[in-house]
Length: 146
Image 1 (cartoon, rainbow, N blue to C red):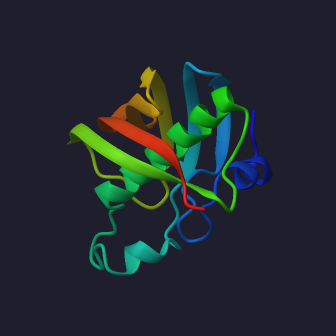
Image 2 (cartoon, helix red, strand yellow; image 1 turned 45 degrees about the vertical axis):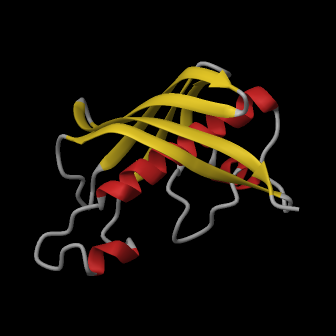
Image 3 (cartoon, rainbow, N blue to C red; image 1 turned 180 degrees about the vertical axis):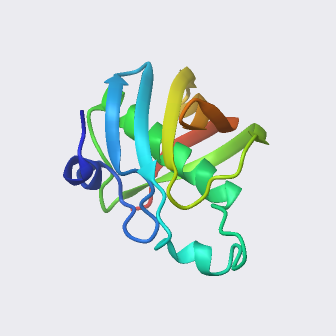
């Protein structure tokens, strides 16, 4: 549905902080399913943890937020530009159910709960195979910086 080149057109993030590799499915304004391939080459694995590499939970949430931003843009029909930025404005009920390790393929599932006054609220889930790795409620907004 969306490859890395199309993702790069929509999101301002770049290596090492771009955490969405591909979009598999999208229903604009409703839901998105995306992938993050987790490899041992990720820079955070050097220190988290040297004896047992585990993807930090905050980066799992960031990957989910990036997928949520792609979903939000599907409604607005645009991406970011030099005059705007997307901010997290809230994370609620975050739960981590299993570690995410090198070699895992993280499936990012995002559903819109509501959009009100420019604030997008999403229910998000990260899975490895059919196993739930993390879930939360996220809120994001786009703001002008010019």
